[in-house]
Amino acid sequence: MFPSTILPLLPVHPAMLLVMLPTVGPGAQQETPPARTATNLMLNNLQYQLGAAIRVLKVDEGSHPAVVHAFDGRGVPAFILLRDGAELWRQQGLPEGAPMAALLLSKLDGAALPLAEG
Image 1 (tube, one colour):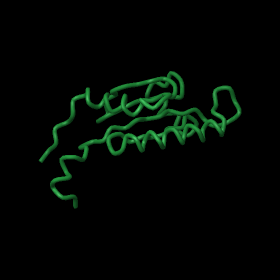
Image 2 (cartoon, helix red, strand yellow):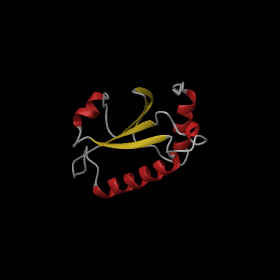
Image 3 (cartoon, helix red, strand yellow):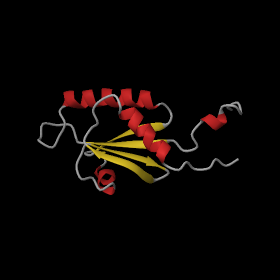
Image 4 (cartoon, helix red, strand yellow):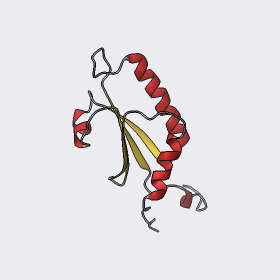
């Protein structure tokens, strides 16, 4: 059990960043294995920067086409930031540069936070 002083600091419902990724393969609409490795490294670094505030979830189009379709996949890769089932932000393509974590966290600040029950 967490001490009561820590509980207010933990997010009630952490946000999720769905990262819709193309399948890995040689085709024109697919990602090469070296490119996927670079993407995975970038996403791991992003998760580290976001901490517990946002959980990064990778969704492979080949493994989970229904999920990509459910989010009106107009093309992959794509980023979709969600909290409590509501879409807060979306971007087609993979983001570039260091300010991505700050941008994502700012999207949380701009959204109404759910009230903690207690």
